[in-house]
Length: 271
Image (cartoon, rainbow, N blue to C red; front, top):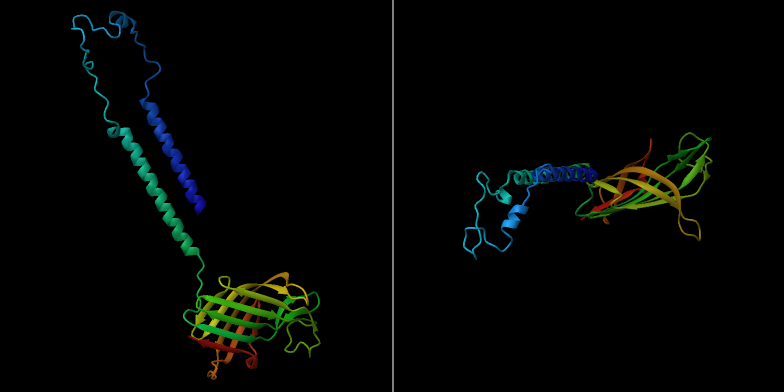
């Protein structure tokens, strides 16, 4: 949209300059006009001499030839009015386009609702979900999620313990199913990349989570993988004295879904 505004400004300026040049060329005298020989008048009355029949020492104030009118004031000419009108019209058009661009940008700007006025924390463990299909079997994960919000700030940290299983879907217990443990991946995303919608005492968290591994004795190593997640969590039952209560929720990863493990999932909301 900014490119459109700039292009329109350039077009209007070029059109305005062309109009001014046309008006200027129309006022210039024609090159084909017959030249006037002023040599005889120069010889009869050289500069500094009064014309014959007039007293010396007085300048001749000859009237304009009959039929000629003095040129109108500069700012009252019709062509000046045309130029000023064109400038005003160009300014109005540029203003309209600029307002429209801002309105469209505001319309397409993605909205982000966050928990405002309080804090929320959640510790969630989910059942298995397919992380990536393989030629034989699947790679599955059992995500462990920590979510925190405070005012307009939010953060989600996720641990993805992975297993390679000779199965078509994630088993309830990967160890009992004979799955081979693989590398654990980690992701940490905060505001403003993380979208958090508050619904009552629950939350819906959405975001894209680039993952990394944490080798022993070395710095984190990005995997190049990015998981698009949607997590919904709500409290269940009454809160304990410390404010925590059991939570239930759903994690969506591509076409797969995983549900919370009740005994390992809690949520706390407060002011």
